[in-house]
Image (tube, rainbow, N blue to C red; front, side, top):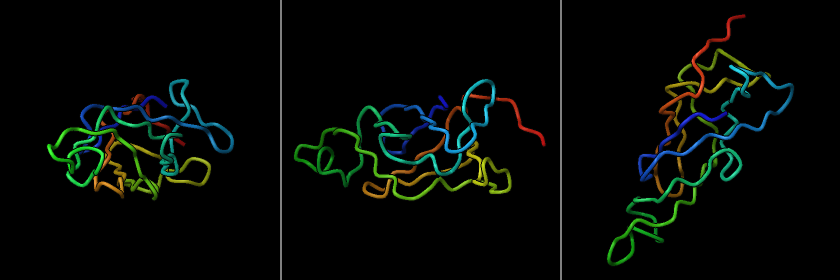
Length: 120
């Protein structure tokens, strides 16, 4: 919860919102995220604006201008290592990527919001 995320076509960072599904696992007092935390407007808030050349609300207009960000994240995050799990789902960590399928943006974690490791 509170990890800072960035889209390759976003004009500024956003925050990851974690809604625990199952027993909450906390890291530094905040809910830990899984790859399933990818739902637009629930987990992925809009970035300030979008500069994707394919976004008809912005850069695809004449003249091109940054448009509103409407995240379209239809598939889960792709983790760098699916072996660490939370409630039987791969944990979300640095190096994971999420595709904005409508505008071809790639969302990454730029600050995890927590630095401690879970050791079982």
